[in-house]
Image: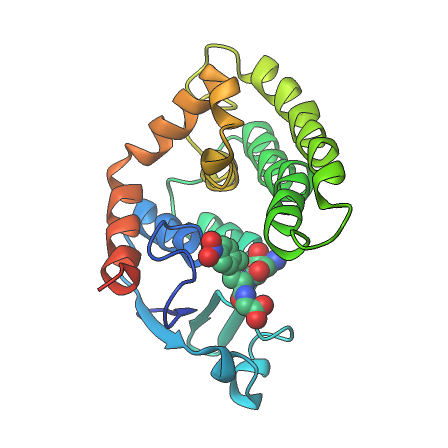
Length: 213
Ligand code: GTB
């Protein structure tokens, strides 16, 4: 059965691959699972038909027969559970890779999202410029540790896993800020992720829809 995911009708990033459907597309490409995409306008995201699948009216979602999933992490985990290639078979290594999935979404992504909030949604506030250095330093606090942990390794725990897929996807959001370049090993790690043929296919698929005309 070919699963269907949802994505922005037009992503606000103009095809930079930052919207979260790219992570799901990447996971699908890694495991060789063909998929279809239903594109949603902002209005359709909040319509009852979509809210029945995604309680918060967001993208991405994943439908496979009677199974409907939301939350990127749960979708990537589902794919990793059902297909080979995204989680190791050995139980302890598998548990560690799952820890990295959570670390990407629960430890690294929140301060990264704060930067977007500070830069875009709070930019007009009188205290915005004062807050920005604090937000950036909270990112550096976790990246210092992540960079030290990764060291010269290619991936976080042996072979590439869903943990790396999510971590690279989160770190990608920092590129424009310049913070990623403060950590050459993390910048190289992200570049390694982007160099994977599966990532290239996922990026190209979303770019074909979102690139400025
Ligand atoms: N925790 C959920 C998950 O991981 O799946 C979060 C889902 C989420 O935030 N979805 C966003 C959404 O649907 C799109 S990805 N937003 C519309 C809404 O809430 O009404 C977030 C996103 C959006 C745009 C960019 N961009 O343009 O750069 C990057 C990321």
